[in-house]
Length: 227
Ligand SMILES: Cc1cc2nc3c(=O)[nH]c(=O)nc-3n(C[C@H](O)[C@H](O)[C@H](O)COP(=O)(O)O)c2cc1C
Image (cartoon, rainbow, N blue to C red; front, top):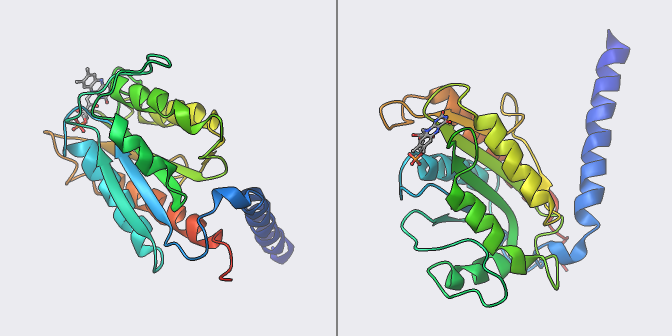
């Protein structure tokens, strides 16, 4: 029994070191030592402030509680008038001024939340990801930063894990490193809205918090040492 425990511990450490190497290898991706690391949560429901925004906020609160010095900000796309990518002559809309927030070198990680719409991410979430295209070129500004994802559905097994997977896959195009949460939230936050509320979904809220907590810990663990 003992060797197994040791092996498990060894593998855990090895995994952490491997992840650390991947993250610290990108010095340009880490916030400068003097800046407080910031985690931005993006709520991608067209309904501002509703269950998706609440789930993202729960994850952000847990990320902030993971250690001192983390700043968080919720960007709720709910009431924005915005479209997806339209090419180089993108017309200005409500999202245009928000892009600068994601260019900030203090950004240490993102938490993206989407409702499950027909077992897929919302069109608003896809529009957001497309509009982040300028963060990929000429520089991969989000590369090597951790990504947590939460999804809310109206039913259990309503596609939440598929939505998380879709968002993680899309953000791989930005070089982000998708991370799950602490147990039992290995894939991310999966919540069920009942009667338009997630307040009673304690186990779902727990997965959002475990996702935020792990993201916060990872962001803190990969800060460059103070000069
Ligand atoms: C167009 C549409 C499609 C939906 N499809 C699903 C679905 O496939 N699975 C599911 O569990 N819930 C589905 N729902 C329910 C939403 O995911 C759920 O109400 C969610 O809490 C909405 O997020 P919000 O409160 O942040 O707006 C759908 C809702 C809409 C409006």
